[in-house]
Image (tube, rainbow, N blue to C red; front, side, top):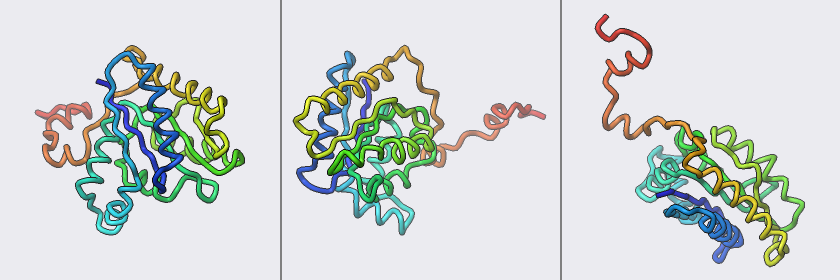
Length: 207
């Protein structure tokens, strides 16, 4: 079962950001032959838990579940509205509380919505560097949708191209992901024995 997680950072309801996310989901799922488990994380619902996490250092149950879903995802679609020429503050706050290795090697399709096409460079000057910093595998094609793009065939073509790239990245034979270390919570709950740590470091545990 392929686990596809979608981050949607739209603040309104209904949301053009969610609309773009749904189009991407449909296009990706339609290209995958294997069963797909899709989970959409609506960041709007997590605004208060995220603020609590910032000031207390602890994630509530709903936020913790969302963070774990992202960490366990085989692929991620990240869609944000554009604010002040960049991703939204809510979107960045969620990224800020992810574990450092949560997205290591994970294929990520970046997408954004904005009022006009002049904001389209946000994909390359903001979203792509952000996920590269997180050591994710950012797909070559991102999707930007201005208000006028919805209903235009050009947007559909961009969605299909990006979906094809994500579907290809999820090919089980592609070997595009490296094994991920256990989460901090898992390590604290069941620590790796010291002898095992010594073996990994190349030392003789009996010496």
